[in-house]
Image (cartoon, rainbow, N blue to C red):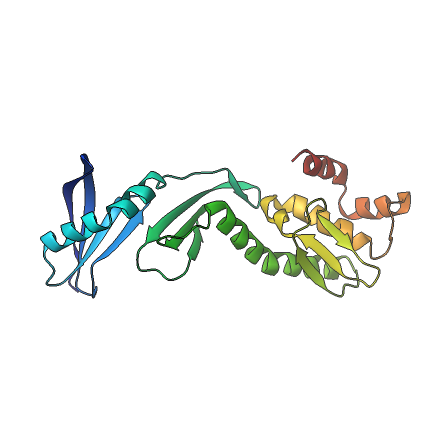
Length: 226
């Protein structure tokens, strides 16, 4: 199988020297630019296209290139299941919608050129999407393990509550729980499950919580401090 050839080239944009990576692709159908967090500007050149054409294309798109190169190494204090993760966003002129991938504590967001959605906004959307599968499944597992009768689990975006339990047997959980380590998430879920038997915060309620989560006081204190 023939491998695509990769080269580096330089040119000047606004009196600044720009080094970019060239990928000669036998599968590409048109010239393509993309910003890669590891290598910077990449130019994908299809078979039969000359380097001069690529340079003209780069100059034509120089405003877009300069704007997104400044945002290339965007890093923020994002967290997933209690661990800090790196969030990077790159842009592609020919993408139609966002593509998000997560691997080895790195969230890579590929966005269409001209997108105004911030990494924080897209991170939260991804976090909510993860929560909708992770939290209900975990709640059902814990309910079965500790003999609670559960009806539905809803994922919400409460501003001041981590969870709630209704008299009808439904539990609501804040998707932002996904930022916390599993022990904290388990505690919040157990807390709400215990309300299925004790709809109050009486001594009887806390004794029930303690039988399942002996160190709940420490976890409760940790949750309040964050």
